[in-house]
Image 1 (cartoon, rainbow, N blue to C red):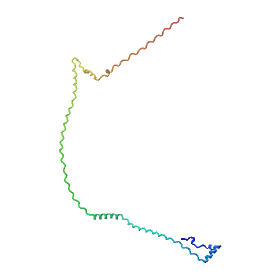
Image 2 (image 1 turned 45 degrees about the vertical axis):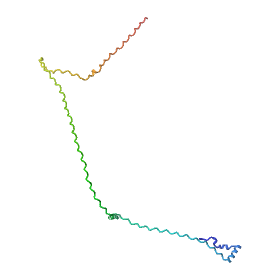
Image 3 (image 1 turned 135 degrees about the horizontal axis):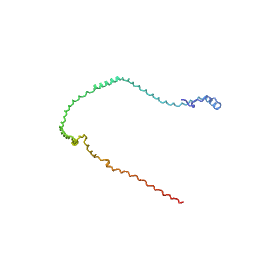
Image 4 (image 1 turned 90 degrees about the horizontal axis):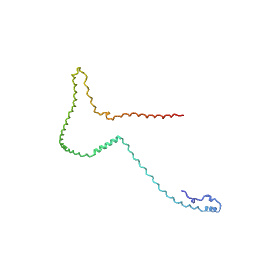
Length: 195
C-alpha cells in the first residue's frame, strides 16, 4: 500500500531555489527539526481466508464381475437354501371318491314302422289286334279251257283320307284373249282436178 504525496518529505529541488522564501526555508530547516509525519491510516484487516473445499470421497471399489458359471451355481444354491428352510406343507387330504354316476333311464322302445303297402299290380300290355286275314284268291273258272295263269285283278286303290291340295284351292281362271287392235281408217279420196 502506497502513501499519498502529502506525507512524503519535500524534494530537494525545492530547497535549492533562490528568493527570500527559499532562504527562510533553509534557515528554518537548519535550526528546527522536521515535524514528524502523521501516522498512516490503519490498514483494514484482511478478510478471513476461504476454507478449502473438502476432498472428494474416495471411490467405492467396484467388485469384479461374477462369471456366468458362478452366477448359475449361486442361483441354484439360493434355490436349495429356500427349499431347505421352507416349511413343510401339510399333507393334502385324501380325495373324496366320486359317487357312482346314475345310469340314464332306458329310452322307450321304438314302435316298429307299419309295413309299406304293396304296389298295385302292373297291368299286362294289351296285345295288338291281329291283322285281317288275307282273302284267298278265287279258284280258276271252269269255263276257261285254257287254264290262265294271269294274276287276279288288283283291288281298287283306297282313297287317301288327307285333303287334296288341288281340290282345296280355287281353280285358276284362264287368261282372257288379247284384244284386237282397232282398224285403221282409210284415207279420204283425193279429189280430181278439173283443169
